[in-house]
Image (cartoon, rainbow, N blue to C red; front, side, top):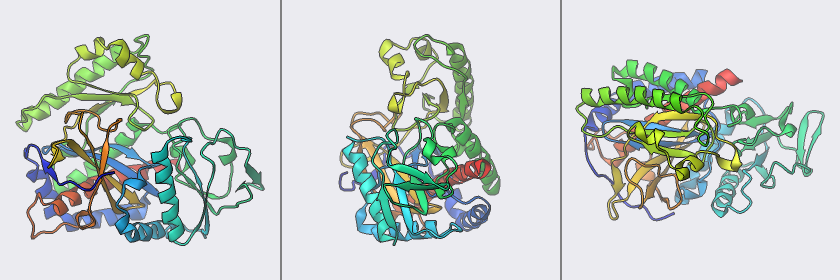
Length: 411
């Protein structure tokens, strides 16, 4: 994590149309969100990766088991603690003890720092916290007594998953009476990015009708295929077919809005995190001519799980960069429930503005508190930091609402 560098537009493009519309209607937007949360409670926590190309601002990933808490600015942890308390208070049950089940990262020091800071926030919010050992494969310390989960003698009132369950749902979570946050059925064993972005598209459609804007301006187009095997080329015809359709849709939109950029598509695992199993293409031949290194990259995801389903997602350029070093940047916004707590910029000195920044070599720059995305300032310019981050906060909450609808239908 580095000290904050000013983030500026590398190319201003026509971002003001989207910003102006959202900021001008912020009271209508806030009222709409308040009504949505009454019906669809937000997940306990989340982090949203956002890209801003000027002409389009949209989420590219929604993580419901977030790490990276150590990259937040701890000077403002009182805000985070308050958000934790509000989020836990929203559940209609008494909670005093919380068990955190972490990822299986026994040697990932960055993750362990995130876990330590997350548990400290919950402790400072007034809860007793215990973290299980960072493996759910060896579950000898877990015990079920009358459908109550115990861990090493600790009996929690709630179980907080900080493990995305890519490797499956552990048996000790079956039929337990305690509250599990978020639902174990929203892990990557059962969840897909395609399904999430289906929900997100529906949310954007309703939101765009509210503001009378084209939902494409905040919603990345996507397609998905059935079984894929990049080694044997099984399903390649499906990839080509959907990529062609996607390129046609994006090209039409670029022509409509007079956008002089080359469309590109991100092909990535339909489930899983950590930026694994991701390639970028800007023409169909690149699918047909993937080299061995690229194909091997698409054979497995985190935990060495096989990659057999992918989502083809419209690529969104990032026309933001650090002022001093001109490194491409993208914001990541964090929340507890529907309370936004800020976030950071992810930057990368070796990546272009159409590439995946969630890869080795990335650097994090915390967003200052005065720029956190709670409310716009109508007295400041449209593209001032506080107004820009308010727009990011709106987009992040749209993604959180989509996840809330997923959870609503699962539970």
